[in-house]
Image 1 (cartoon, rainbow, N blue to C red):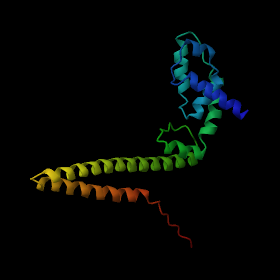
Image 2: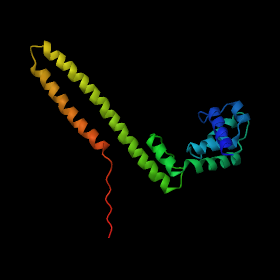
Image 3: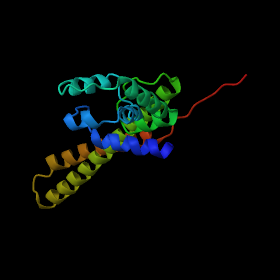
Image 4: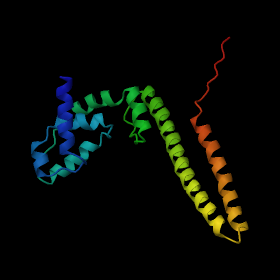
Length: 182
């Protein structure tokens, strides 16, 4: 049963990469599977209204009950705390569809880690740029007569590099939590 639901969800995913449905999709959609896929992805419940609007253009009605049953089952999967961390860590948005505080706490923890990772990547990228610029300046120093401005630029880059390296080290230090027991 579990694998069947996964296959159905993947089938629905292939049918609906976005919420817009064409005539063929409106005629042939498995509304339960589509709801399951939307729930598994943490989509907002208003997504079914988009489907209804799309299909109404062709005179086709969405089976709201089937979609909702699938959606609620999908949300049970999506709203697990460990999934909250994964979603946050991937930097994905959260539509506020879970009632569990544990999910939201884990999502926030994962998202904070995502932001730290993103900043660390930005710092590493800038450090590579600085290293390249320093090498370029070193090569210019060898062939230049006016070295003062080039040396000053190199000094500024080295200072920026030191600050970024320190920030990167700070980002990589795990949080320390103190607990008092009486």
